[in-house]
Image (cartoon, rainbow, N blue to C red; front, top):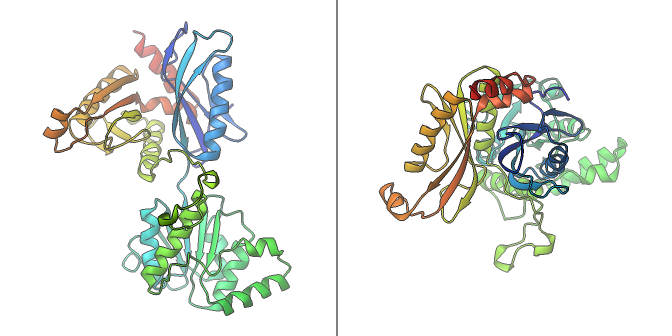
Length: 389
């Protein structure tokens, strides 16, 4: 069992409604990783089915709400929210030249945490690459001392010279990263492939590198090249083929079903909620679990409400969001979760300047419940004791 660290890839399963159960499990959480669990859902059948759903979400990264039931006693049912808690995807740009600037902006737009590395300090400064989250300056031979390369890392090599490109590639190609791309002419790529073969790298490993980097869209300017690289990052991450949608795109039976992928901003809100929980900061998390009709935001959208009035994120704005914010205050005071449905009918929507006409169902919970996964469960026990008085 145990508890998790904040930088782990995990899936959190939360009971949001129930029927036919003798004990109140609403708000209960259990987290799963590949070889670790934390928290608890009390019932064996629920634990088993939750683990199965968690495995699927670990593979897909999608947010989902699922109805589960006890096969031995079908009247016992629970609805669970299955949410991925993943560290952000990282885009590491090796080389801070003219391509790095627009590529960093494109990477940030796609939700990556962007790092730019160059041996020239002025090329990693905020003034030069304002879209980067981090700039690191050192000799390229030391990149492994400054950067962590893992399965959520995508690396694009765009240094100013052949030798630097090769030096970076020799180090990164040994790492289990999600993507490696290197800019270069066909002649340069052939030379580097030959050198890698001479050094003993297998053909399979060499062919895993995207070089020349990017999709063939006729890009010429640094901005266009950055777009072609960003498009390739999306294609690799989503399992696309880069076919024109005009001609039908990828055949349906070949498409990768990744489900409803949480937006980067919503993943960031979840991380903020966990931080608030572990730092004992009073706050409530509001998550859209269902939407019907036309609504500004869909399932998986989050808003974090602090006791001091601050909010992070949005579930759509306007009257609906105001309702949920007020309900979040009650949740913080009572230490008990709440299920809230908001209708965005024509009158309300028009008054807010929106023509929606749909509705959303929002699960609101004290962030202290997340501490059970990361701190060992003390907050959940406290909440139950306070809520039962």
